[in-house]
Length: 97
Image (cartoon, rainbow, N blue to C red; front, side, top):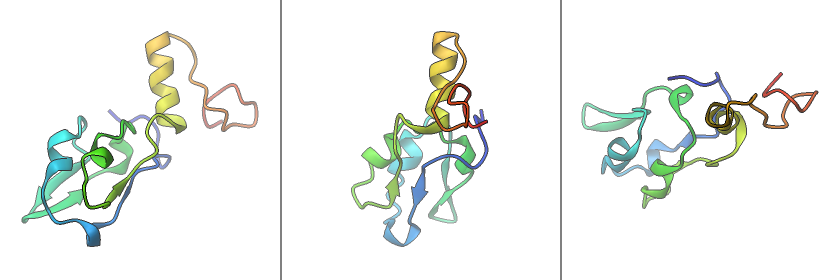
C-alpha cells in the first residue's frame, strides 16, 4: 500500500550495507529485497516510516524519522477515522496540500 509519493524520510546508504538482510526480514511492506545477493531499496513510497529497518541496521545504512511526516499522518487518520494532519500544508489542516 502506497500512502503518498516522494515524502518518505527513508534513506538508504548501500555503501554502508553489509548485506545481512535484516531490513528485508523486518520491513512489513517489502521496501527492501535481496537482488543478486545485494540488498536493494525497491520502492521508497511503500515505506510507512515505522522505523523497524533502521532500528535493526547495526551498520547505519538506513535512517528514517519514524512516526513523523505525511505517512504517519495518513496512518493516524486511518486509525482515528479523521482527516490526516501533519502540519505541512499551508492550511495546516490537510496533509501535504
